[in-house]
Length: 127
Image 1 (cartoon, rainbow, N blue to C red):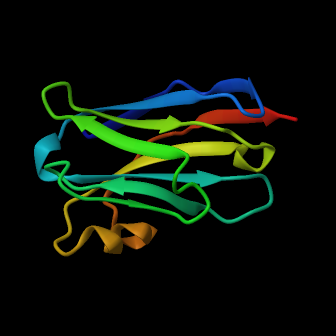
Image 2: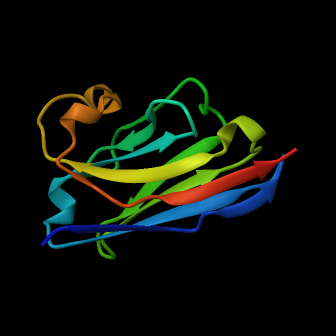
């Protein structure tokens, strides 16, 4: 059974930082590209960032580019999202997802390419 478990969310002031983690089990983690998405209340889920299986390629949404980094540790079956200079509009539930679809990392901005999803972790940024 595949499980993706996010952690690291919380309440932070604007300008602060958070590091989200996603621990994967039940799959060959190193064979999957990983992505982060988020969903704010009343809004559709949107792409945040993705990383290839080898960490050789990353891709970011325009809204977070320059403020976020994505990394992974295949030995620990974990992917990370470091978020800096947080803004109130970053408030959302953040989800990690795993994709074994072929093709360039840019394709991973679309949720349909993902096979598995976590339950999410809440990030709240106060102004």
